[in-house]
Image 1 (spheres, one colour):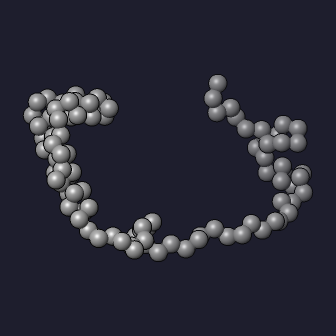
Image 2: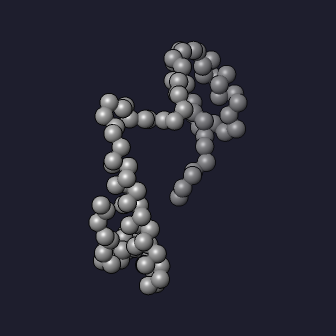
Image 3: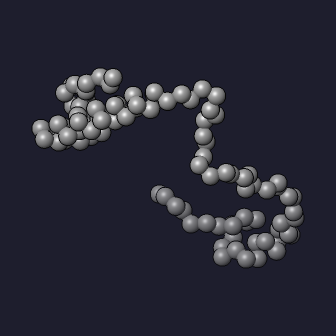
Length: 97
């Protein structure tokens, strides 16, 4: 059976979550946490022996492709599209001071 949640636990949890709870909200949170623990106890009754953990609810396929080396073109051709240049590089505006 799930253990009871103490008032200190509720207050500590509220501090960690940066919440200011009034007495009514503390009672509601305490009740909700106790219900969660009861549900976890119920789940612990299930026999999960031999069942593999589920990583994702949908079957996933590797969406990455192999890297293919390709020529980027001549350096001057690539830089011909640059709005501004700085030597042999693209010139980009500063993003922070």
